Image (cartoon, rainbow over all chains, first blue to last red; front, side, top):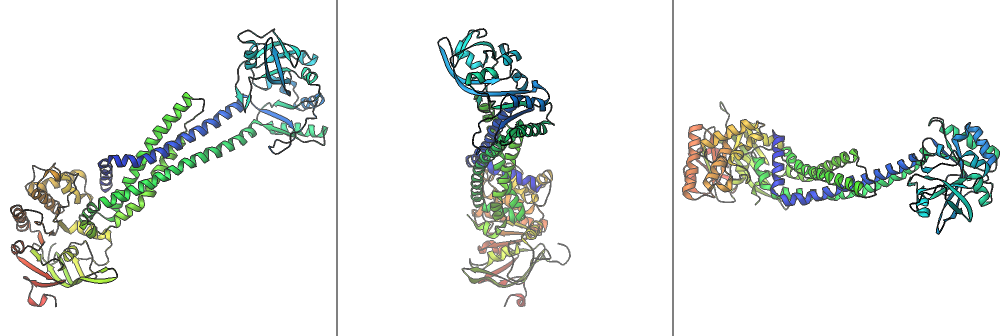
Length: 394
Length: 238
């Protein structure tokens, strides 16, 4: 009964000062809304990155010379086709292994020219990575073994060089050497900052001849399942190290890439949420301030209530509820606005935004908590008022 | 209260305020007893200590020295929560300025003390409605204070004071904010409640005419009881 009265009185007090209540809530609305929106953007970005990494294919293992470390100097690869045979032996299945030799080259078809990444690869590439063709066929084993001058184009390259025409069967010149287009990839977009539509695949052997090298830049291996992926990576690195005792090699899994990126993005999201949390704190100070004003304004009412039997904690509860009501109504409004803005951003802009239920629950909990934390002092002050003094106040 | 327990009993009660580090005595040893069903007026000029005495008798304050029993209970050592409970159980207040809640109907104003007694809403309203009928405001129950005259507001306040069925009704200048005709009506109501229902009424006033209507007068001066029409000569403070 006392609790119900405290609720009723708290609600009534907020209604009595509508504008003031709304302005005080605004601080909470902005703080909670900002937390929800920023967490949604952070989560959306992480999900998008995850989707990109997983979109490469499953159970992938990338093997490169040197260390995978931002501080390490770039390593010139000493790997060649004999190393490929050794890796295939370790993996036990040539279809699960592909390589890359990457070079930036000028490509030209008729009057159209552009600069793009040319990748020397094996015919197994579409089995290791997820790459669908829009038209034509991919490289064959014969193409690779005999070093044919055939090329498969990324979607963007095809559009830029051939426009609406079907490029399959057309001529293409790479670094002045003539190639024949045999296929075009379906559009894939970006993955990890690399535009997968802006590249040209040619047989490894052809690429080595074109650039004048025997080297291979990297291996990509598709493990049979996720369980054996780490040990497979270790085996391949050990075999390569045995063959090149002076060099280091690294095997990276998607999990490791995701782990590193996820950590960075997680920290970023947390920092953004913390900045938004500061505005919650500022909103809380506003609530505290208004509650002190409210206590002062209603000193006589407090005195009267005490005279007729309200205990200090009845009065304290009344004011604490008023503060909590202010912040939690503000919090709910903030969640509604935050979710709305996040959904709108996700739908209308390329920025990914994913609303998470826990951020809404957390934001609401924090706003109610802010109400309690910043309402306690005014509430205690009200509860401790001397009824004699309070009744005498004008 | 039943039996021989007086409604309020003060023995050698003192109250000293500390103002800027200086102790200012407001009451300097007051001994008096308010019996059940009495009608007492406390009079005296301002500064005589009558307001301080009224706050003490109403359990709003505690004495610095001496013994004060309200409804048979010694107030020394009670914490603010226990004092609140004691007031709710034994005292009804009527103030000069009415002290009604502005945004609240007469009915809910009267029901307010029952909230702190822990009664349910239905019971509260039923008893509040009964009280308003008894003070002649059965037709004004849902009006707010600003829709009522001063006399009506003071009657609402009296209903609020009586809704808890207190042992003593303490009225602090209850006619101070009213014109003489309305004031007289309010006094009549208090007298009727005293004679018909046996509620002890303690009236604090500086108005000699108002005081003269009470059966017993206590005159205060300089923090002491100057005279008490009910007390034998020896009981008046030294």
